[in-house]
Amino acid sequence: MKLRKCDGCNNYTFKQTCPKCGKETVNPAPPRYSPEDKYGSLRRKFKESAAPNNLNKL
Image (tube, rainbow, N blue to C red):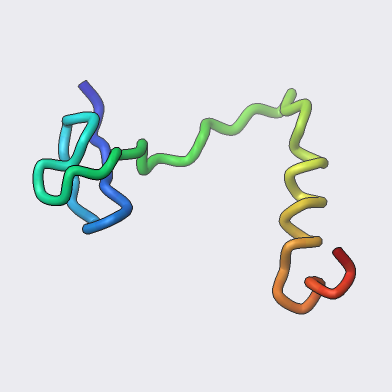
């Protein structure tokens, strides 16, 4: 069992659906770091292009 978080009401639970609001829960932990990350450069490039001041470049 892993701790999960509801994005709707910010409630933490062990269930797949939130007992308070009924929405789907997600894993609140970030993915593990790997030095052999194949998609790291693409993820950083996307994050940089999605910044609020770069929206006109998309």
